[in-house]
Length: 418
Image (cartoon, helix red, strand yellow):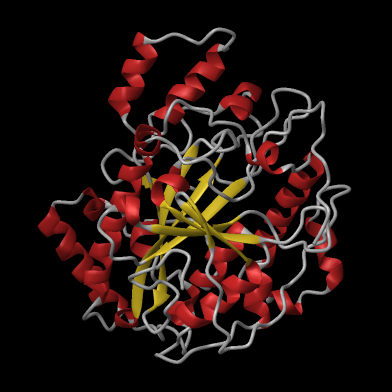
């Protein structure tokens, strides 16, 4: 066991470390609630501002290490210094291999979330998610290295390539936003910038954003079924969209929507898709992040949110993620510190009721010998996952592709299995 460092008593450290927290009400889950959540992950779990700095630095390092051509196990130890924040401690550890046939223990269940340690998740992954062409696989050293990065590691190890977030969907209620701006006023002590940011955040509906991503993934999977080259896949896709009168039909040929398959590394790999669309399937994951990332823009927007940033197209639901630089919320008060993103893996679950779906994520990177401690993996119901925190005011639902021969996105996920 490790001894956790105590929370700074004077400074208010408001941070979320790649996880969902207190179970929200139905209205909060469906429509974003009333802005700020009931405290932060750092306050709840005793993390310090130094912990938050280390997490953000490691998140950035993961992005750099996950670029095409960079094999994590081949990167020299000295490369970590290139991606660390000044003074940040890189105490992340790759978890050891687990025997292929060792069964996992049951997770600890609490309300809408089940929790386990990283080693036990590896054992479950090998039993449930590892199969390639029906054969069970042991998690490799590189996969365990990917996993050790925390929330993004869970999505990374299941999606194959580091998540690029290019094909992201969300839902923004324009009428609610306009009505709330016109018919309500700032709360006592709330600035105009805080007010506008809060109204924008509350106008996003994660339930509808998730539903849209699932609809599009379903259309893509139908188009993939009998297509043995990319041209046939695009033709099938356009036919399906025409039949549904879907606005995505009118995306340009260079759109992320039409280029997503060819831009997926595993589609080109011989042991993946081998350029055959029928060997691939569309799956879903989620990312929570902060809107005020424009470093040249208003400092108020960096603190309280940019109402105009990362809004989905009203016709297609697509979110332009090209300006997402994984920059965290700026502190408005001394001692505040915010985490830069949060990922949750969904896959291809067939459960129709969103509230019964399971999202796999984690608390922070694996540091069993450091003050932060070992990484825990969570399986959360949708309402728990989508609740969000004050660190994030945007929640997108992203489509990526994996080979059908992979089982990292099973149709059914049993929470806290076995």
